[in-house]
Length: 183
Image 1 (spheres, rainbow, N blue to C red):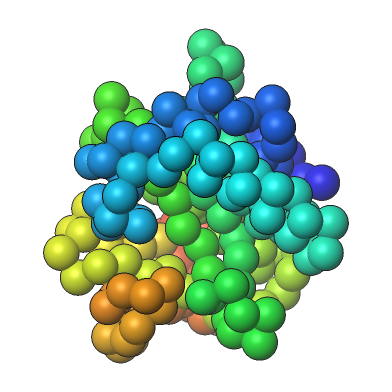
Image 2 (cartoon, rainbow, N blue to C red):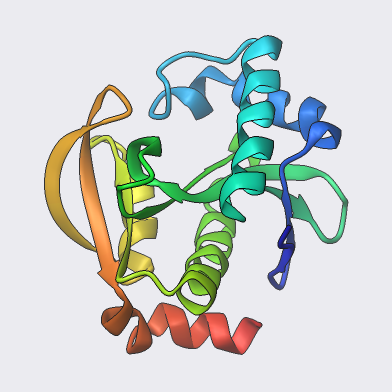
């Protein structure tokens, strides 16, 4: 399984050792407002880790824990997975972070490395991301990745805005240049 390093984070495949930190993140109703609309129970987080471990085995990619390289604390998590968990769908990136880390660039930093890894390793035609239209902060991260709004649709039982970046667009993006400089 793949570990990614950014200037401030170590992205580790989610595993049982991340249960406490991930549950702390997932049980925050403000963090989960635009993800599931409700805080997770401990059992929800356990089931998430089990699903993620199975996807790492099946696909070779899934969700990472964002671990601070300085403190060793879990600051967030993010993924490369198939949109709507449908293997026929395009690759998607996504993220969630602890509230106390918001506005510090961690989402953009981690997303650059997840998307850069996906294009370099999996060679997809495109990578997408979705968020509820009211989630302006996530949409801003998508735009910083070089993604463009493509459509409104229904994914994960929610109305969402979809943003995409093609492999060709990634090759010429500022996000890729920054990713390469950080790698």
